[in-house]
Length: 318
Image (cartoon, rainbow, N blue to C red; front, side, top):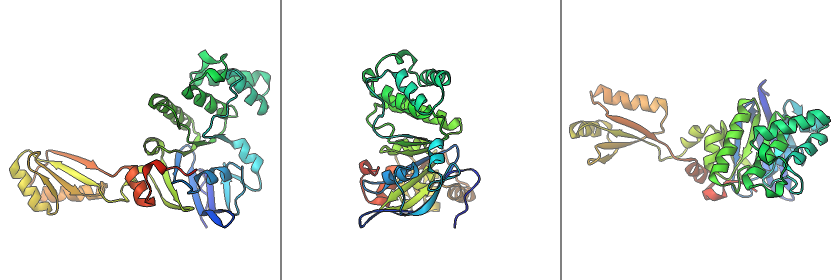
C-alpha cells in the first residue's frame, strides 16, 4: 500500500463509490502535494464531481481510505471540514446581502468573533478587489465579482486546502484571467488547490499535476508536459540557413517531413531532453549547423481525446 508522504495534502487509496449497480469510482489513488494545484479532468459521467463530494465530506465512499490535511476522512470528518474550503460551480453568495454582509455572515458561522470577523471580511474585500463594492448588494455584482466574492467566502475560514469546482465557468476571458491570478496567489501563500475545470487551457496554465478520470478510473496522471508526450503528433522543427544544410540533414535524419521553401525539416519526437540531445548529436556528428529549433507537442485537448475518445468540450464530468 502506498505510504502517505510528509508533505501530502490529499491522500486517497482505493476509493470506490457506486450508485445502484453503476460503479462511479473504481479504486482511485491520489497523492496531492501541499502548496500545489491539482487538476482533475474527465468526460461527462466520469465521476469527477463524486470525487470532490467524497473528499469534502459531503458523501461517504463505499470503500477505500482518504486523509485530508492529515485527518482521516471517516474518523475525523469535522477536522477535515475545518481544514478545507469548497467553492462550487454555482455561486453560493446571497444576492440580498451586501458583499461585506455575506463575508461577515461566513465569519460568524466560523465563530471568528465580532471584531476579528469584520476585520477578516474587510481584508478579503480589499485583497480580492471588492472594497469599492463592499456595501452594494451581491445581486448587483457582475459574474466575475460574484465569483471573487464566492472565493472570499471560502477564504474567510483560512483553509489550507480548497476544492474549486469549475471556478471560471461562464466568466469572460478577462475575469477568467483574474481568477487565475487569485489561484496562483493562494498557492504562493501555501494553499493547496484541488481544481476541476471544463477549460483544458486552464488546467494547462494552472496545474502542477493533472489527472484524467474516465469510467471511474484514473487513466493518466502527470504534469501537462508529461501528459502531452503520451500521445503521438509531437515533433521538432528544424530550420537551416541554406539548401545544402537542409539536404544534408534530410539525408542524415531519414524519415522527416521536408519544406524546401521554408528550409525546414519536421522530425517526429516527444520533446524530451533525451530525444533532443540525441537528435542534435546526430546533426553535430555530421557537422550540420541548425539555424533554429522549435519543439511542438500535442495540446491537452489531443491528450484528452486520445485517453477518453471524447470531444474536448466534454472534458469535465458532472
